[in-house]
Length: 379
Image (cartoon, rainbow, N blue to C red; front, side, top):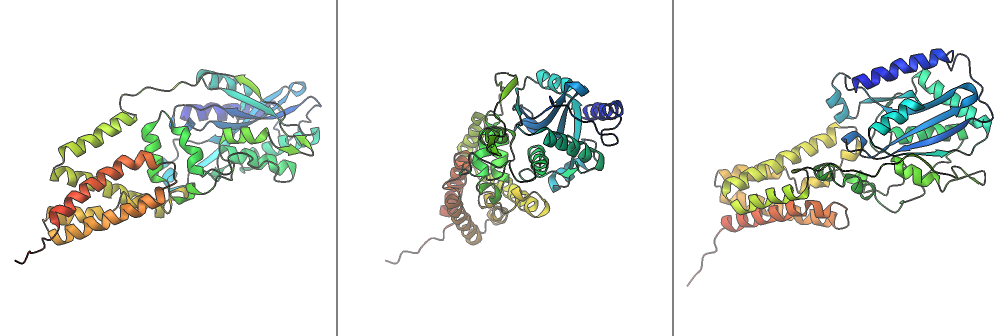
């Protein structure tokens, strides 16, 4: 990533010098200039699972063919991981020659589609100037937010600013939750799907009314009208690749089910302790992230009813053979799981966590029965 950013920076300086600094001496676009939204297909890396959005300005008369990309970040940022987790990581825009941009996606075997915006020349010029001003002024730097602020939302914001109103809005899947919209993107990436399912809180269960994913923007643009005309009447495929998915002997549902089956088959006290310690520690992590992080998607995480920190207290009393408190805490966790199932009733991730729920119930019921106080029989 460091090399990639360096190349982009070098090109940006060259590009701006070559055109005598866009914002210092404005280029007047010709009548044949086009502006378009670029949608890039899904990749197999964690940062590319959702695709990408960019804006292209093309004007052969002025030798301009540039792609503005609001999705750049620098791995060399001090404290990169804590900043990303906290929600303080700065993203920024860069500009590429179109040939370099398309070469990169050709190399990655990712499809690229283009939707030309049907707007007058004056607004094309204004968008061109707004993009360059954004780069020059630093307005293109922003704090990344998974749903609220990303490469797609930034592109939408600057286009809407140019058009003078909120023209681009979501037109499809508005009856689905963010969680349901995101869920299919993790197909063929099982543990990424499981991880996001359990670390995301209640925000992603809200109706997905905001445009934040490239493919969602692409679908909506086809339906949007601007001044009684389609805003993006055509979708042109610049690159097309059949989706390919990595095969992994471990990153799949089978390894997940086998691991859980081994826990159940062994079914010893040491296994109970190890399982509940792991679940409890994860619960503490989820609670910490909910308070620590500025990512609102991590707040109010009801998955802690499954990954319950109270399991750590249960482990303590269970290991000390304190039957009374072991029994009480086992009942408490069983009750928490009942409430959890109520929350999960219509959620997309019910099936993926169901094996963990069943395992937890099985272990807790065993512990409850073993530590239940015997009722004396009077003859």
